[in-house]
Length: 211
Length: 211
DNA sequence: CCTGGTACCTACTCGCCAGTAAGACTACTG
DNA sequence: CAGTAGTCTTACTGGCGAGTAGGTACCAGG
Image 1 (cartoon, each protein chain N blue to C red):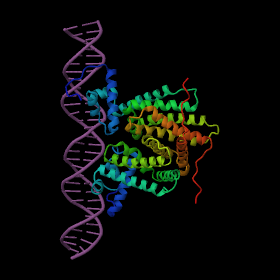
Image 2: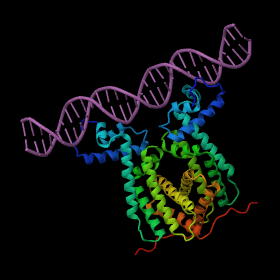
Image 3: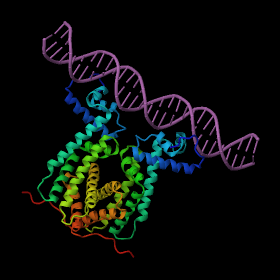
Image 4: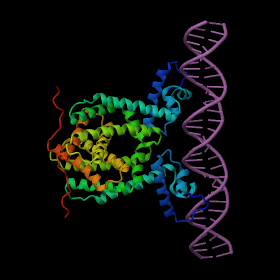
């Protein structure tokens, strides 16, 4: 909380990282609008003009944070997933990667999920794009694993449901950190994959005949 | 958008409704912080002091909106659900009620889902509480339909996943309004219920043995 | 026609916050 | 040690937006 005067001289790259870490912390706690550049600079242990000198405007800073964290997360997932495997295995490894990342980067997840999607800036586009890629990927996995290809809309919507379930489960997990990542991931995998394969097999649930 | 001077005299109750409709519209588009009382009053077709005279501060106004819409939504679901039926039928009717409401109240859904959860005010509590009730309800349905009661945590997390899937699917639906509510609801029902009952039956998915 | 009450307004204050001007300190380089 | 490039600061401006002071039109009932 820097009460004393001048900060130690550090090379630009290091400062930039510190600033972005601080920014993600503050953004995740307060959201974009409520977060002030003053507070970010304070948490970063630096004065405001440095912020502007290095990272540009508030919007630019936010966008940069989003981009960095989104990239990190996508990489984490991409590293975890095992291509050239059966769809279910791919999905499973992807889920593990996702929950692993979230578990170790709570703040990042907060910013990515709650804050970014809310704002109408250029970041929203960026973020929606990433989520879109995840969606199409999952949708592809789904269609890939069914011979009778249901409509594109159907696959898309199921993918949306799955991704949403993952997000929500991640949020829930934030409040129950005692559960290990693997267990949570397995739970979702079971719920959704069993349901899906069952669906593909033609076992449709239907409401009991109206009385 | 009211360019002329004075608005027609109307009884307080009517004005209050107009104001809240306007507020929900603006909040849903911009979010709590970015929305200004000036804009809300403009959309409502009255001047700012009326706002304060009738609905109090910005936070109070927001909380009131949240409460009203949350109540409407819970009622819509409660009316739709058929108690004293099998768990699956209950879930199904609940889903129909939910998607029906969202389909006819896009803005309300936006505010409830995206905006309210983000802010740290007293409304967040209110909202989280409502979501919590939905969660426990679903969790109860789930445990109710299984003989071998898995851990409480397991039911909770599955409920979280289900609710999240519903929310996300609702968002997806906003972009694909051509699909009828019933179809979307059925899709989710299938995905999640089949998966769940399968899970209960002991059919667990497990990763293929490590090579 | 006055008297009050209720709807409604214009025109402010005041604080917070994004963004900047102008310069001070440090360190390397010749 | 002088020059210059990069780090870092204090101390401002300017605008936006929440909330208010102090009215004006309008409609009762007496």
